[in-house]
Length: 217
Image: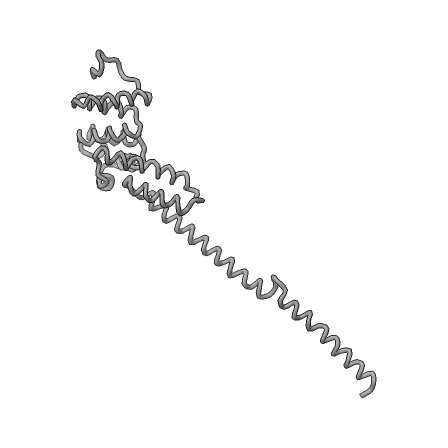
């Protein structure tokens, strides 16, 4: 072999040797090749996780909205607040939890069974008022009492139920219900309770009609 051929071969070998480290370095450079390929599955996994959580949140919220009994509304709302603190429905869930918990406590005091909120029958307006009353709405509770007083809204008149619901609405803070239950208790000889609800009605802003004597309804 000539001297020129030997030098040419040596140069080629040296060039190849120098290029190998560069190729090896490129194969392990961060963010290239396998690194990029691994990022896509991770992104898809995060998307699937977020979608699954959103679906669970929506299902849980539907359960809250569908609940009818005060105790169950309060329980489901409280659990929703705990599990989904960043939910768009967080303010409504908090309001439901507080209102329903209060309604549940009053429900027991006035002698209303939890079954009543599931089994009571009536037209659409009555059922809507019943549900809102279970969530702590005083105005809705008063409308339920009026339905039992008149026998309207697709239900039969029931004086006992009307008294219970007047008491329920009064405890929730309805001024007229407080006055009406004071009248009812006064006529029944329950003077201490009558005085309590009379004072409550006035404190809530109700303006009593003129009368001839103290508690002369």
